[in-house]
Amino acid sequence: MNAPIDAAMKLPAQADPAAARLALRAALGRYATGVTIITCRDADGAPVGLTANSFSALSLDPPLVLWSLRQASGSLAPFSAAPVFAVNVLAEDQVELSRRFASSVADKFQGGDWRDGAHGAPVLAGCAAVFECALTAQQTAGDHVLFIGQVLAHCHAAETAPLVFHAGHYHDLGDRL
Image 1 (cartoon, one colour):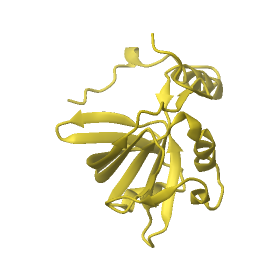
Image 2 (cartoon, one colour; image 1 turned 180 degrees about the horizontal axis):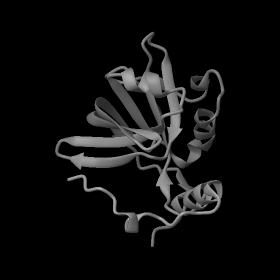
Image 3 (cartoon, helix red, strand yellow; image 1 turned 30 degrees about the horizontal axis):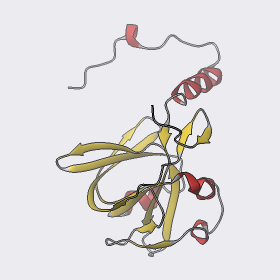
C-alpha cells in the first residue's frame, strides 16, 4: 500500500537546501556498510563496473539482492540493459580497487584479478563474497534507480574480513565483541 505522505510527516523546510542535503548525507554516513564493486557487460561485451555501498540482501526465497545507482551516472544505461550483473563484496585489502572503481579512470579493470563469471559478468578474485545475479526488476526512486537481482550463483564466501565504509572513510572490521 502506497499511502500519500502527510505534510506533518515531512522534514521541516530548511533555509539552505544544500546544507540540508549535506546534513542528511552526514547522518546517513553514520550507518556502516560493506563496499562492493558491481559489474556487468555492456551491449558490445565490454566490462562495466563501479563501487557501491548501497548493496543489501532482499530475500532468501527466492534469493534476491538489491543495490542502487544515481540516475545521473554514466553507467546507468549499461546496467539497465544488462541481463546479469555481479556483486563483488570487497575484502579489507581491496581498498585501492574500491577507489579505482569509484573514479573516472578509463580502464578500471586493469587493476585486480578479473575473470568471467558463470553467467558472463566480471568477477574479482580475493573478495569476501561474490554473487552473480539475473536482473529481475528496476525501479526509479528519487534520484536513484534500484536494481533487484536474483542470485544465480554464489561464487564463494571467503573467511577474509570485508572492507567497511563509515562516515566517509574506509575501515577494517575490527575485533569481535
